Length: 545
Image (cartoon, rainbow, N blue to C red; front, side):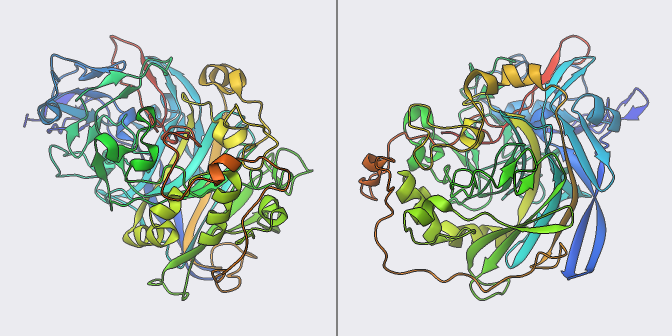
C-alpha cells in the first residue's frame, strides 16, 4: 500500500482497488430519509448519496495515470485476465460536490436530488448517473416486509427512450469492502448487482472484471464494455418510468446477496440462455398501459396521473399474516397528486379475459395469469415468485436511484411496443404510447433532450399506511384463488403459440425487456480521463428483452 501524498492541497488515502481522495474529496449530496412508526409520527434522518463506482475515475495508486480508458482496461497496469492483480494496482477517485453537479448532473435540492441526462464538462461528456444512499461507511439497508416506501417525483422532462428509476437491490451493506482487493466500499459506490446479472461492472468481489473484456459494440459513446463475469442479485423495481409510461417489477433470484456468475448461470440473451440463469430477468411487471389502461398515467389533465405535475408514489409490501416475519404475498401501489389520493389502475386485459388474480396489485395469481395471457414463460414462478422476493427484502436491500438511456432496445420494453415484429394491438405487446425506433435511441434522446432533469424528493419508509396522508393500510392481503379456466385473449392470437408451451419448456431466447442494467450492459459509467483525454459516462439498468 502506498503512502499518502499531498496533491492539490488534499490528502491522499491510496489502497488496493480502494479509494483515493488525492485529486477529489468525496462530497456526495446530502439527503433526508423520513422514517415513520405511525401515521403522522415520522422523523427525518440525514443520509448521503454516492455515485456508483462504474462512473468514477479509475487510476493507478498514487498516480494520475488511468487504469481504464474509454471502454478498455489499460494493459500496462491490467494485462491478461488477472483481475486480482489489476485491482491491487488501481483505485477509485472521489467526486467533489462541484463535480457531482458539473460532471454528472447530480445536485441536492430541498428534501431530495435532481439528476440531468447529458452533462458537458471540461473533460468531455457524461450521460446519466446511478446513486446510492449511505451513512458513514455503510449503505442504508431497507427491510420492507410489512412496510411501505414512498417518494415524490417530477417526471415532466423525462421523455420516450429515457428511464428515471428508483429500485432496490440486494447489495452488501458495506459494498463488499474487505472482499478481495476492495478497500473502497459503500462510500465509493462499490458492489452493484441486479437481476440482469450485468457484465459491464468494472469490479466484482474485489477483482477487476478484465477476463474476456471487450468493448460493447452497441454503445456509440465508446465507454461501455462487457466482461466474463456478471453481478447477480435480487431486484425490486419500485419505479422504472418516464413521462409516458411506468412499471413496478419484482425480480427474484435463486442466490442470496451479490453472486458473481459465469457461463450459463448468468442467463445471457446472446447465448440463448435467458431462462437458464440464476435470476428472473423478466420479472412480474405491473404497468397500467401494458395491463390495458391507457388513461391512467401520462402527460396532461386527461390522465388520472398527470406527469406534468409532481406526484407521490407509495409501494406497500403486504405479508400473509400482517407481520414483519410473514410471507410476502402482495405488492400494492398507491398514489397522491395535488392533495388527492388516487387508487392504482386495475388490469383491464386480465378482467376482459376472465383471468385469476385480476385486480390492481401484484400477487402470484396475477403474475401467473399475466404470463399466460401475454404468452410469456413464467420464470418469476420458477424462481420462487413473491415468497423468494420477500425473503430477499427481509435480508435488506440498497436503494438505487438512476437516470439512463438504453443502448440495446431504446427503452421500448417500457414505453413503446415490443417485440417489434408483433401486433401492437395484442395484449401485452404495447407498453406505452411512444413510437420507439430511431426516436428512442440514445443518439436521438441525448441530442433532443440533453437537459432532461428528473427530481426525486421526500423519500420515506415505515409501517403500511404511515408515510402518506390518505394512503391507508387497506384490506388484508388477497387470498390465492383456486380453479378458474385458461386466461384467453378474446380477440384471437395474442401469443397463443407461447401459451401452448409446457411449463418445463421455456422459450430459448425470448426477450421481453431491455438490457440494462436497466443489463446485459444495463448501467455503465465511463472512464475518467484527467487532462489528457475526454471523459464520457453512460448508464446501465436494466433489461434484456
